[in-house]
Each structure stands twice: as C-alpha cells, then as structure tokens.
Length: 474
Image (cartoon, rainbow, N blue to C red; front, top):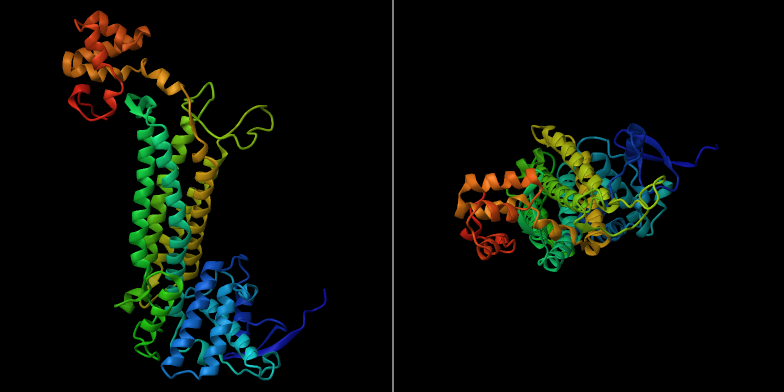
C-alpha cells in the first residue's frame, strides 16, 4: 500500500510526521505509536464533556483577561465541534495509555488548537503556521492531572442523570404496574428454594420495584460524589499557573450547560491523588447490577417450564429458543440483562484495581477507570430499557401459582398459634408423606371445626401482618 501523505508537526520533543489531513498533532501521533494496544477509545460521553471543559475554560480565561477575545472565541467554537461529535474521528489515542490520560488531554488540545487556527482564517495550520497553541492557549490554567479526573466525574454524572436513572425509573414503573396487576394472585412463597407461607405475586413484584427504587437512591448519593471535581488543582493540587477564580467559574459554566451540579472541590489534593468518588460510584453500579441479577433470575425461574418448571409467569415470546428443539422458547431478554450485570461487576473489579494504583499526588490508571465506569453506565441503561420493554411489560401470571396454594405444606404455619408448633409440624409431615393437604390432615388430627379451618387456612390472611396467621421465622 502506498504511504499516506503526512505533514511535519512539532512538540516539545521535536518533529513528528502526522497524517496530512489530521487535526491532531505531534504529541497525539506519539501516543498513537506508543500505545497500539486495543483499538478502544474514550467514548462519546467523555469526549463531549472534555470538549465542554475546553470551551468553558477558554470563555473563562477571556473573562479573566488571560486570553485574547478572538482566540478564545475560536477555541470555544472548535471545542463545541468536539463536544458535538463533529471531530470524533480525531480522537485516536488508545484507552491503555499514560495513566494520567495526558495523551488524551493533549489530543484534545491539539485538535482544538489546529481547528481554532483554521477558524481564525490565518495561514493554513497544515502548512505549519499556528495562531492557537495547544498548551499556551487551549490548556491555559489546566493540567491533564485535573482535567481528566474532572472529565471522568462530569461525564459519569451526566450519563447517570440523562440515561441510567431514567432507565431505572422506567423499570421501577413497569414493576410497580405489574405489582398492581398481580396483587390478587396468591401463590406459594419460597425460602431456601423450599415452599414457604403464601405471598401475593404482586408483593414479590413490589419487592423488585423497591430494589430498583433504592438503586436510584444510591446513585443519587454517588452523584453527590461525582459533582465534586478536581479542576483548579493543576499539576499536584496546588493550583500553580491557574487563576484562583478559574475553576469555580468553569464549574458554573458546566453546571449551566449540562443541567447538573458541578463544583470545585475544597480539597484538591484528595481529588487528584485518588479515585475514591469513582470507586464509590462503581460500587453503586455494582449494587444495582446485583439487584437486577436477582430480579432477572427470579422472573426467569418463575417462568420456567412451561410444564416441567415453576410456570407461575408467562414471559413474552420474542424468538425461537433452540436450533434443534421445535417450539422451545427461552427467557433471552432476562439472559441478556444478566450478561450485562456480569460485565458491570467485571467493570467494578477493574475500577477497584485502578483505584488502588494511586501514589502520592496522582492516580495512574485514570483512563481504564473512565472506560469501565462509563461502559457500566451505558450497558446498564441500554439493558434496563430493553428488559422493561421486551420482558417486564409483557409478563402474565398463570393459574399455576394459585392452584398450588391449597397443596402448600407451609399452610400449617397458620395452625401453630392454635394447636402448637409441634402438632402443626406433625400435620405438615403427615401431609407431605401421604400426599394429602394440610386441611385434610388437620381435619382428622384436630378438633378444629370446618369454620375454624377455613378461617385459619385462608391464604389471603397469611399475606398480611398479624397474629392470626401465627409467627414465622424465615
């Protein structure tokens, strides 16, 4: 293949040949050559926020009298193109790069500087003339060491707000609707995979909805952590080479732009030398994933069968389940969600490891932490919406659960306050051995009248608190 045309760019280490039509420069090209690792790149959400940080920084530096108005305006416009995705193809540095993310920060600085130079209408930047400098102008008042952790926090904060929480609230709403729909369906509860006292199918779904609701609460607390950002600390947290009002003004601009709270930390040293906020957020995502595992597993087990399983739910049939068994239909939407949960838990493990790689004034695995955090958020948001729409909303209760209640051995629990625990246990054991119902055995072994048996063995009464059904330990 013929060599691609190049141009000569310079950075502090000297000259470098860069693809002729690329907006990035020498530092970015060095990173491309240094890290031919995975082909993975920072995602759209991160690049968007990085562009917004650069644009807001230029506007603030102009207001502070540190940038000429025409240069600031050109940087802002070029940064807006980065934020809008117009220049996504210019972000070419691998995730597995320098641990501070300096290569990606310089990638942004160079792209914005070259595009801004072009916008100013001076001599072509491709001929080597630059009206805007990536470090002196675009990166003014900043360091990779405070910009990259800020971009991680803000992009995760926004994605949780715009995508994940709405998806969770949608699932919560779908589960609550099913709880109401299934409220009159009484079935046998299960503890330790064994029959337990009766429960409403709607109560089970109320439990699922409650897990999701609490997941949203946990993420709201994580958002508080993410809203505190490192910007303003520059290299090591001291704020050298930045105006003392710079960071707070940029944070205010980002807050207004994005509709979330972004605030400068009151302790830059902790904000830059650790990933504690990212780790806490990841832990909340992991908890949500584990909650969803429970919900998805319960639903597919309750729908198991249709003849040799539990069969208390009918799941939507969305595709054939087997290449060899005609008529087989599998719970594929739940399985898809479960695989996403596994990936999210894996992302959390990677973030936990990355967070431990903090030494003195910096963490050294910020890119991989960012990649895994944002991937976890995106996967959960997409899988949740799919699970709500293609599985939960179409669930139907079968008549199998209610039909089995009368045969449930744990109905004997309701007899214990009247006949005693030992006698109730004997009735349950005899019913199990003989294949008869609790009612049939109790009719023979006790002096309880039919009216009393009907009152005590009413499964509906056993789904609410009260002494009439007797105490029970799970």
